Image (cartoon, rainbow, N blue to C red; front, side, top):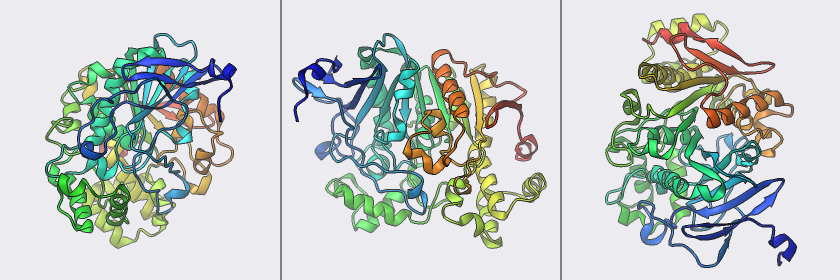
Length: 486
């Protein structure tokens, strides 16, 4: 079907290094979807670092979502809460842009999606950037390679390819975003869960301060493990496929077959209780050193940081699976041993939460150990270097399926997208719009000014707790529990 000439002439067209792209316009916002920022990682480029796109002749339409990285839907009950979008095609290294129609020199926000390094895409309707463009930001959302394609440890192949993709996307933003009205000197990166983990590693990268000025890390702390440990899942996938864990052996495995093998070897695991999963491997670029240790030692101190987590992260995995009510004495003892939770620590948490079940105690302890304690530790380290840091906690308890303040619950509020069907399963039918107004505005304000609207971290340990009917800044929340880990 051809486009009427009067509509065609209104479509915005932009020239970039690879060629010309033509987007769409409505409600004062320009949208450019599926723009490749690197060459398709297929054929000889599979399991290799990203390289610039070879370009195209003429004008390339950027009016629909680009291909998504190969992946399976969520499972174990999460599939009813977290949607999966699949767009077929090879050019998975693409990005979407939303910008005000009259954009010139505006701050830029680059969103890196989460999904345990194995799920997610910029094509999810919940990641629509219109609300950011509406509020004077040029919004960019890249895809990156996932699971085995992005995070295998293979002989003969570079490691951490998914993170290398994110770096390539940010280099693209640095070079090209001015054409869309963005200021390459005012780039805020933000991501959730696995996206936050990737961005934490990026902030520790030597190139970081030339690529972004601020960062928002939501519910994911930077970290990397030795290649032998990161490669455990690769070895399991290789065994499942009956192949060697080498680039040559994996290069001709169809993507769907690779995804099926990943599903088989990761069955039953989750980020809270463990099991095989993908992770960054330390030791070569783009993760030359362990990122969290590098940040504690001062890396990224020139980048403004907004960091936080949700009050009940564990409920995303514990509630839909029924694990919350299945934690018996044996499982609880095993988890205590794994996480090295001593009697004194357990006694304090039990005293502070007298009505908590074993499942709730285990989830809270795991969430603090994996997120809240490292957040405090990083904020303290940055304070010693006078690096600007703001800390938040998302506390609103969703009534939907007793999820409470679970992992990912802040996303509809950050994106001011409470009316989007993608998020309704998480929030229920009547989430507080006032909270979305407040939280979204704080993120935008931070990108524009570096001040989200509450005081930066200091010795009083101020945390902005986002909640309804009203939010508040709390000094040293749950300090008795935090202090017992010393």
